[in-house]
Length: 381
Image (cartoon, rainbow, N blue to C red; front, side, top):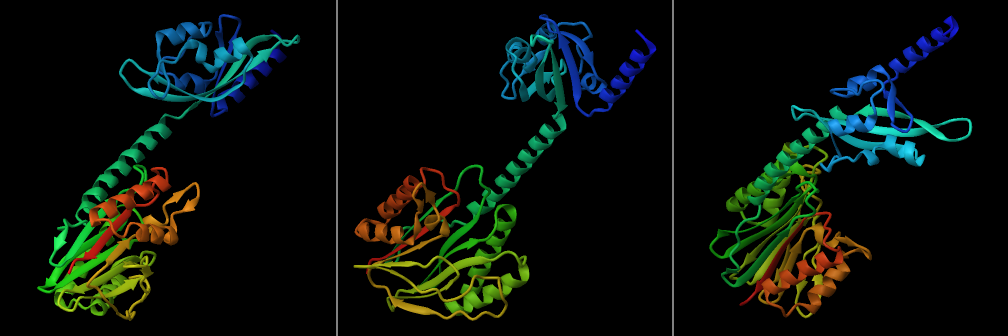
């Protein structure tokens, strides 16, 4: 080897050793390792020796797919490049060491051809993605912890509601979105702040996860506290708005319906703060008025009460997971919800709610993107 050739080889070796990827060259039908740069040797717990056939190395080590299936020698990018002339990009390979530690690599390979185009070898590159995989797993575990915390909190936001409450029958339902979706901030509540008054609330806190759950707790239990002080919707909503405005971040807000059914008068007085309009179901289906902006957006907001007779018929309260349930024909929407309510108005409350959940689930082919909360209130007097 001439001095010039040796210098060129040394220079090439230096260049290849500074490349952040591992470089491996295999030659001949036996796929013998003829070159590995420094990074390639670092990637393997026990790197193959120069001159060693790669299949022999693969057999002696535990190579796996990410899902745990054995990685066959014929599946290796190097084998496919050498035997089939394929160029393979970014196959993920797991090497399990004798201690049980797993190293994760991305492998790419391309055939080396002679002047006649015959495949005589392979050049492969490797990327060590073990830190990335470990970080991804840590993030997944953190997400699962947050989800469990959120689920525990959110279960507290859906009170056990007796179906028969004085002259009202009330049925509630909650359906979570897809498993991978973060916990949202839907909640509802029914309670009696005084003997002849039944308070009814349903709300939706912006955001997801633990932060939304904390805001939901603030909204639900503050609302109860103000209602026991004075159940009138305007007082409760204005007091709650001022409290929330000072307690949550400026990017967050809460949409809310709060009403009181007066059992003596046979009426409902209510306020809606940016929430989906309730549906009053009698011979027809009517959207009730929206009376104010969402909670927490501006301080000192005024909320005007509405009052409707309620000795017969039903009231359907829902979160936007209902109207925004999306399928191949678009959003479920209010019009379809009103059509459903009209055609099912004679059903018993439990049957009505179950049928509606089935209809929504069918519409989106079982793939809810947002949580669904429902309250169905039927007057029986």
